[in-house]
Image (tube, rainbow, N blue to C red; front, side, top):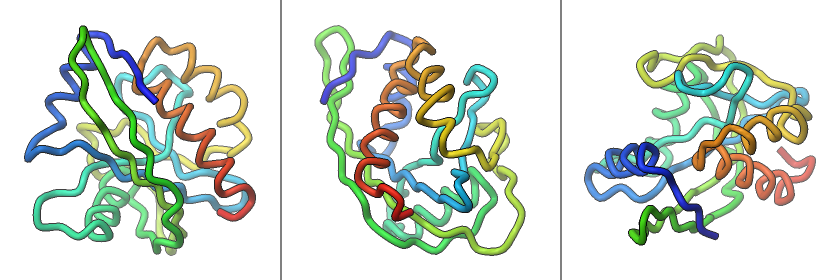
Length: 166
């Protein structure tokens, strides 16, 4: 799969590539029909996606995932299942950056939700899963953001892979 990015998003992608990073880890934590979801500051109101982030040098994948989940949602989680490894190409004006997304499911441990990284994350919330197949999916696709379109595409693939087995 490939996604063409406009200049602004391309610059954001390139800035995220410290230490040669070309990946993200995304975690789907579903409880009682709700998805633990995040909204970043530039997202239009009402649009959310599953939390994700990068593994830092020296971290194991599990350590990085647990750190990112805490930073973005305030949740402690127990990882349940490695669901998907997705490789995509992001491109801009003929330049291509290969990207890999590793998707996991997890279980929220007791505690309150609330982002710790307030510079990056505007809001963390439990959002009805059905909204990600309806109004949120439509909003992500209509947002004009390549990154948000990618997140809608990824969500569709994850839900097909896990079905009701969150």
